[in-house]
View 1 (tube, helix red, strand yellow):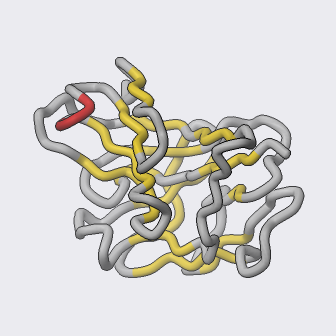
View 2 (cartoon, rainbow, N blue to C red):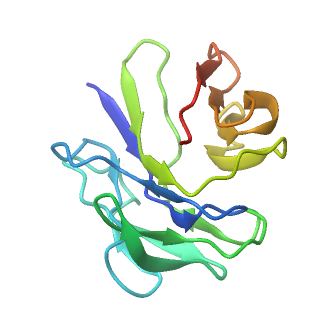
View 3 (cartoon, one colour):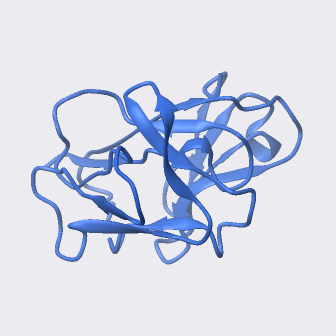
Length: 157
């Protein structure tokens, strides 16, 4: 089964002004949060959502709204990801033998040397995504224990 992990984080993703949002492909199997509503609850529109992921909860001062490539997004607050984040309730399970996909759209990043944490799960072998800093200006890097680093040059434009 192909694993799809989709994040829609808009106008600001935890640290910097930006928009992260999924493409408009058929609904993925595991997580699919559109951020098109209001309030702190976001429904999971995935085809086969895992137990406990039917609704994600927005924590802290971030909100849904704005305008992104495919509708709304998650509007960040400029506060750290320890207090302001989207809790999907999913225990990350990225099998090393199965294929999986992460898809999102981003905009409004600045080219800087400062490292910005975009998403991840510290409980899943340090699985995380960064931009700038260790990735280099305008780039993304996806890394985790047991994974080969994935560098996407020019990916955050």
